[in-house]
Length: 122
Image (cartoon, rainbow, N blue to C red; front, side, top):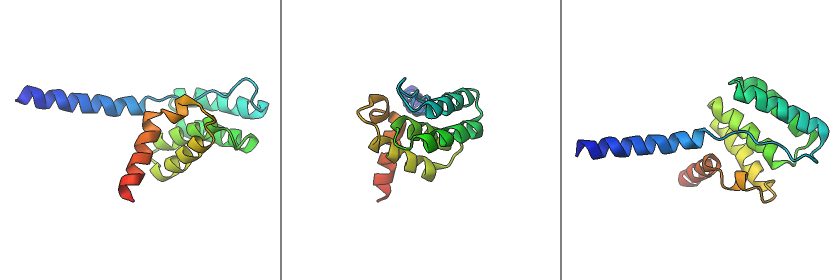
């Protein structure tokens, strides 16, 4: 019995970790150049664990192109890493709205988790 409990605890913890391992998204090659530049800079900072620096670049990218779902997704990830769930949720919603069919956004486990938790609260 104890082995089963440990097995399920491990399984649930691994499922939670998978949601937290999502990576920021690149913009398409045809994206607005300054948005792409700042987004790429932000990804480098994010991968280096410098989430505030990443957030600053992602926000600058959103100033250049506020309708890119990838940018809002990246902003949401940075807020998530900083523990700012309300702001992350806001940008996950925008990312979904501007996803334009991007499956990496629409099928994101972390985005779905945020939306599910919001629905459970309401």
